[in-house]
Length: 171
Image: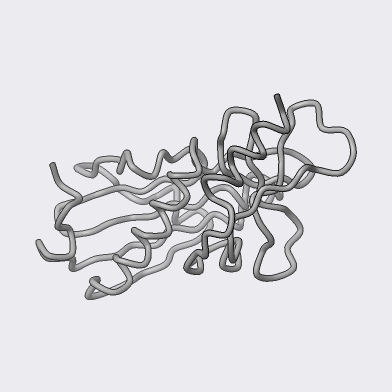
């Protein structure tokens, strides 16, 4: 059964080239399934080779979550599709926003997201996206959680998105 999970992942996602993530040192370059070395009672498996040397790996969890694995497991998105959607959304927002602001540390927790709605397509867990009247906010907590380093909390605010920049994101 576990090998079937890796084979299904590889059949669906194997070889898919990805744009760089604005966080996690770009994320994996391509998606590819890999059986982990050593015992793993929850059967996480590799999601693809990362672009740079990192103290964690990109993995697929037992329920199909996309996340980070180091000393522990932190799911970023509840699905691989969520990770891919988040990358596409970041790429789109970067090209359309009038201003892009990054905040870190405690400022992430101080963001006022009143009036914002979660973007369901990203299936966010540790990482979430929020849609406002003319802006998007990406909140990245995965690295902070997996590294036990709260100073790594980051949020990116893509502001000044007109109706074209948000086209397709509103129902």
